[in-house]
Image 1 (cartoon, helix red, strand yellow):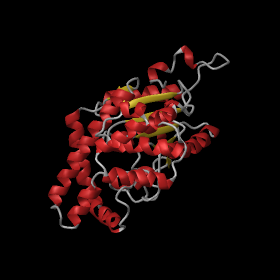
Image 2 (cartoon, one colour):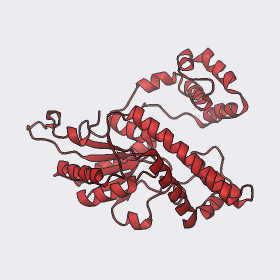
Image 3 (cartoon, helix red, strand yellow):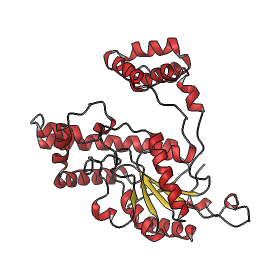
Image 4 (cartoon, helix red, strand yellow):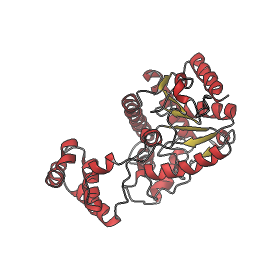
Length: 329
């Protein structure tokens, strides 16, 4: 279990020599547009640390604007890792991120530099602090078979197949949750074992227990919505329409995870004349608000033990930064 700054001084953080161990990482989670980038840069500069991305869209090379990746000016302020390095059509998973993170983390530890992990993808943080299921790769032909069936069949029919073959997972999943039902079916055929088996077989947490300062940015909802709207308008001014058009012209597989970036389909539709620009922007803003709500719900349920911080409360942010810097001293 990870801890907050309040826990750093507790006896469980004592080393074998009886001395208090310093934290090795700061984990900053939060919904989109909540101010994670600014806080991570401030801490990286104060701690001489490295910033590591934990956002599943900011890994993609061609989603510079639509993923709200740190700007070139921001990147110049502190070392940034795992940002914009994966092609749009390359398969990527939480396990791949974990392996990539491990390389950066080990190098930072060798230099005795803290890492500041920042992003909105809750599963990345869960894998880091709790480990992840040790599931082998699924052969592409099996994966393709079930995903094609998933597109062609209704949820009830797929769930019926799962019920016949894996009643444990069928009991856990709703027929309407087609994506997870398909995943359970492809894992069963690809490995010969239920997804429930692999979910119980987990790796060791990479960030040592009690050695991370964990915080979730939790701004007021109305204020967050205002920031979301303002940021998307800025993204459009910075060239988001051109970025969306360029990606659409690549004619990539529409099932790719990278093509789920919010604003991509809406702005591409506007460039094709299928939507007015105003409609596209409004649809993208609405979807971003919904995404932020899903993120917030995940963080409250899955990262309930993490410290909460209102990023718009300057005094609270200053106090958090001071406590964090002190913990590393």
